[in-house]
Image 1 (cartoon, rainbow, N blue to C red):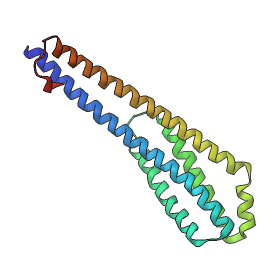
Image 2 (image 1 turned 30 degrees about the vertical axis):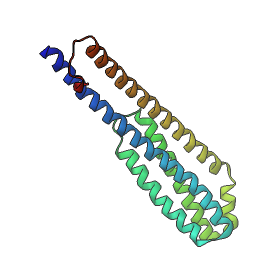
Image 3 (image 1 turned 90 degrees about the horizontal axis):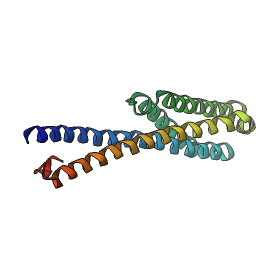
Image 4 (image 1 turned 45 degrees about the horizontal axis):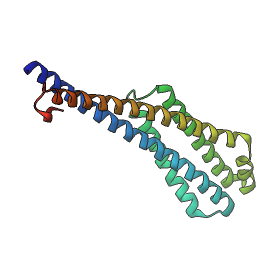
Length: 177
């Protein structure tokens, strides 16, 4: 009985580690999703600023840009093998490119005027770069979702194993499960 309970105790430790891993994956996913939300919000802020010249929109745009850059650093630096690294790199790279493009548009607005800035937002490059970000984010989120689902299945199977051992009379202390 000692050997069985010791094995179950090890399983409990594994279960706790798996639960912690699910939580870390979900937190990582939240940062990615928050980043994409800010990117999308920034698109509207940039457009509003270019059309109205409202300094408040520009300030909000700059504040969001700083938050996006911080989130991207977190996405890049907190990567812990959750999913294929190239998905993270693509998302960070494409989003950084979009931030830089938007900064160039603001600079053009400041130096060459509104028409030049609006012209830059009408181009193929502008539309394509946003599509690339959304595709990269979708692939990253999908991979994280799949990994979280796999971890949850492992946790569920472990719980079923403990339930079986308890109901079979092999294990008497359900607190180990």
